[in-house]
Length: 331
Image 1 (cartoon, rainbow, N blue to C red):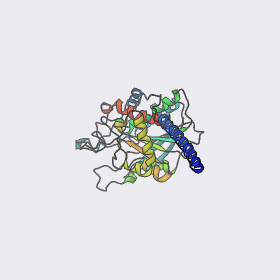
Image 2: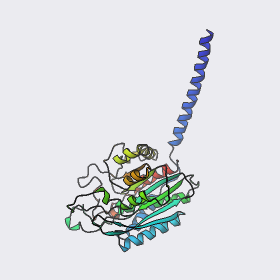
Image 3: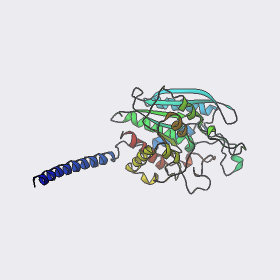
Image 4: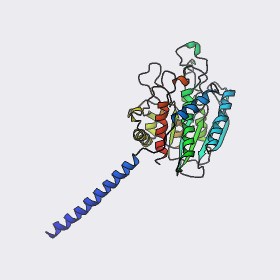
């Protein structure tokens, strides 16, 4: 009887410890699942998107491109970020020299614990997916494909500067150049992933800081288009499955789970690919996916002359921006 009693007491103690642990874990989970108080301003992000488009198409080697780059740098400085650049000449698919600039804006650059946020700021020089072939040689304004990702990052920088509580992590906002110079559809030579994401390819092999490390990275691409939903991109799940889970959980916590379905949306050659391959930083792509769009799974305005402000939705910018805010202010 004595042995049974001792075992019983021991079992009760284990039960109490286990119950308390479960309660503690549940409390931690509940706390982690609580929406953050900081609110992402979609109107501000929309204005940042519109301001970039006011320069015109930001195609490589153009005056509009260079002027917009200066504007992006100044806005990040305005929000207290330390800004550096990488200036280099890279070659397009046909050998054309491209004057490229990667813009890096850093929050608390002295901290070693960092998160990478990135987007591309150049625009496609050819609307080669436009339903009207007469438009194929025209440049794309890039309200969604380019400006929207930068706009979300700028608004995030503004929020961080104005937040009541400073973050305890460093953040690097990396604006990649020459993402959209991939082989045009009319070329018979065939497409190659090496012709895309030129700025990201360069940065991934020559980071702005020697030995650069980050906990994880999030790429924002086409995050403002009408009707957009953000499926789990295949290469993101391959290289960074835990970060996919983190981001999609944050979207649900922020109240935007319906726009971040737990379904895969195909594999995309984008800036996150060289980052994952060359740096080892687990990086995912938040990118719009339209499973029922006949013109393109990237949406009806992708690489067309209709990628303009008329097709930008504040609600989409809000969903993505608040999800990013949820992640940053929960770390």
